[in-house]
Image (cartoon, rainbow, N blue to C red):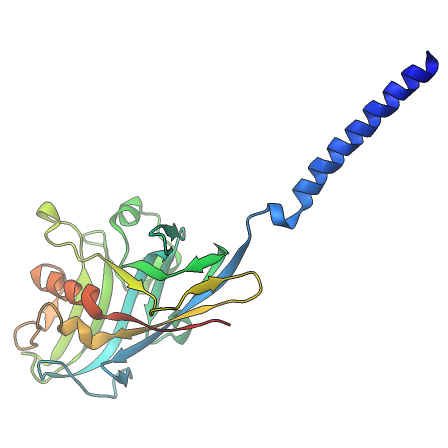
Amino acid sequence: MFFSRFASVATSLALGALLLGSCTDKKDDPAAEPQTSVFSVELENTVGNRSLNLDTDTYTTAAGDQFTISTFKYYLSNLELLRADGSALALPDTYFLVDHANKASQKLELSTVPVGDYTGLRFVVGVDSARTKAGNFSGVLGDDQGMWWEWSKEFINVKLEGTSPQAAKGGLVFHIAGFKGANGANNTIRTVTLPFPSGSKLLVRPDHTPEIHLQVDAARMFSGRNTIRFATVSNTMGGPASVQVADNIAAGMFRIDHLHAN
């Protein structure tokens, strides 16, 4: 009888140890945890097929107007990676301010991204209305960045300033901003979807850090869906002219140049 009880206790202890070990192994097994890695987006700002140089170089629009650029800044937000099956991976809390005067801002680092094969990139040019209405801004969304309209509580999504001999007063001020107005008529927030080149995939893996190389052509603000002539539009800070420029931005300012596998 004693032996029977001893055997029962021993069996229970062994079974408990086995279950505990099984739970511990599962918890500590790296394969049981979702695997993540990192990737980056490098932005190369250009004007047509030329490098963008602030204040010094003169460029020509598709319509023949000459201009220089002294400021070129834009927000990218709500980044998503696209999959071959049509689904999308949203990357939370992604708000970036790219400033051509700040080289470091032209490389975006994304971390804790689930490993996988991705076939495209989608993002918002500007700051979405929901985040704008939420308030409590800091960092790149702070009002010290020169991209916030305090009077209307809206962000400037894209800012280009410079000069042109065709402009009535010689200066260019393109503050592409605003989402308010009747039926969203003044909305300049745009979403851009960019499939990767045919046969290319962004392979996010634990052992390497791939990179997306984007070309951003400032001249495409003035051509594409709408032809912008500086004699007619040289200063826009919201309204119909800004909406036309926003449509141009969405139609062709951003282009996938290549991917780095790393």
